[in-house]
Image (cartoon, rainbow, N blue to C red):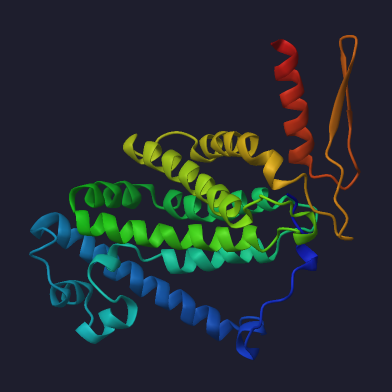
Length: 275
């Protein structure tokens, strides 16, 4: 199975407002919205930690944040949503990574870059992320809300991968929807595993390096099924190859081949040589 080049995908319909570049006014409104969501989230987390989740009301959260009840419901549908103020904005950023993917990039690499926006969200406020993690472990309702939020990323990535399959390369017996869903799930699972380990350790360590290592495992597992890459002209880019000449490894790759793809091929060849 192969993927279509990124540029060959039909453009999704957008409203005229969505296609216009953001103005200073819209950016300011978005920043104010996120600021209020974070203030409500901080108030909710403090009350959940001191009073308990069940005993805390929406009115108390709003009062602690210094706003009216109706203001709370303009930002969150329920009190359990209040401890996840950044997921909506992060989902938009992740989708923007997919939309702006360079034409030569393997779609699986694009998805790995997209979910890094989620990790950066957690890493931007380590203390808050650790406190939220501990709270969600104690309150099943909050854990369920977190799972629902994370599921949105998996659906986004599944649609993206499925949208890049080349139907002309489809073989009888292939199950493109299954491969797309399993690959997207693997990326999300790798991310969540690294994130949980990092949070359990008190947000210590280089989480991006840990995530890159996890993605290498995903790429090694799904690389053959995902394809070698995408070319701007619509033709498949030849993958990098490595040959051994005595004690020397010779790598051959197209000039437009992604550097990370070339490096993965070389690292694998060196690893195979040692064994």
